[in-house]
Image (cartoon, rainbow, N blue to C red; front, top):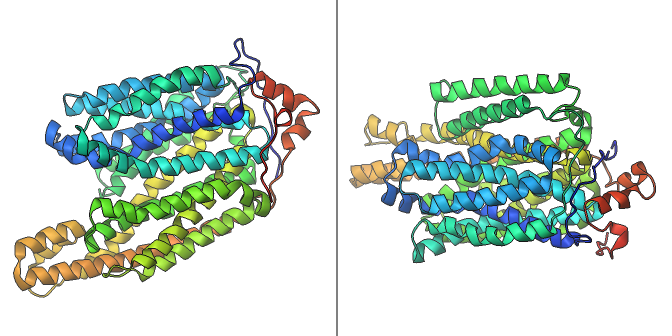
Length: 547
């Protein structure tokens, strides 16, 4: 491991509340993350109510759901690097304000275009908040042991937010109208703004040279095109389709030009030399591969629970809840595991455990097996969070402190890209394995079989219209083909996870602590901590993290 280099953190004109406890700062940052994670999933259960009230067209409904993650993923690098330049706390507080205003607009939206615009503004606010939370966390926890514990708590909160979103949305919809799923953000933001201004420390990276505005816009445009194209592929659109191919080509071209531009600049927006460090580049690759292998699989598993086993949405959420609980446990135990086993063994173990969970789930069949699903989902949640924790911690610790915002943005962008590519890839594998089983069902017309081959839900609709023995045969064949496709998809996912375990062998064997103190010289680490208004680890009682 090359060690963590720390770029100069310049003193600021106005310091926040002196001596602000870094664990209180962590609480504020976790509340920020919780809001963004909630908003990514809370709308899913409200889609039927939105459709009934606003009557959006098919394309408008698609944009209502997708514009938030699309805009958020596109702007992560722009706002992450901007925070390094003008102040991470400033960007975070602006993100709070925008998130609150956009939530009010979304809640009261009288039409689908207004809701799409509000969701896009929420994406902008989310892109301002996400990298800022990680980069501030990187700054206020200079000691790597404490930082690992903080990242574990941070990632556990992310798991909670993703799981609670649909449950909170369902509760609100039972008692209020669909806009209430957005209004819940406003009181939290009204509290977060003054508390964040009072308690959060301000810090910036090295501000030598001008901020590359053109490069930032190139990165945003390139990521928008790539993510849009990948999302369309994940939705089943053909690769050669105009609205899929053009965004992919334009986005890919802009990203290539962005990389070339950064390599030539004396003061690049993103220092690409970070990728020369094996620990950093490997950690980013592990994040992409973990999400690629599992996000599409999670969507398919939800379909299995509802369409094959016949569970309600609430029952499906409860069945998936052990996965979230296990992920929370792994996040909270991550710091201890990292100190004891080191990044290499921890991430390798996480990948292998997740692969074992995926292979266990290949025993799923047409009949419900609650014990099998429980054990598989627990292993899956614990293994996935162990992998992501080790990869995120290694990536953030390896990046220079002066570029913490850019590094955090790259990590979050890798997460989003891996998720999008995973949905497209595993969805394609699933479709290729599912459709052939319906090509020749006895008594079913060819046009009905072709329509049923699009998805299991459509197959059930076709079977219902056919009725009689032909409908029953088509329904049974579709269910069996879906289970077969699920097994094939699980095997492909397991292969990708094992590939990730091999990739993780390039990570450092041990968790090296104290690099910053050694590099900065005696007393400098404490001075840097004082600059951002947070006591250094030596000034406060450190929590016990046993090996």
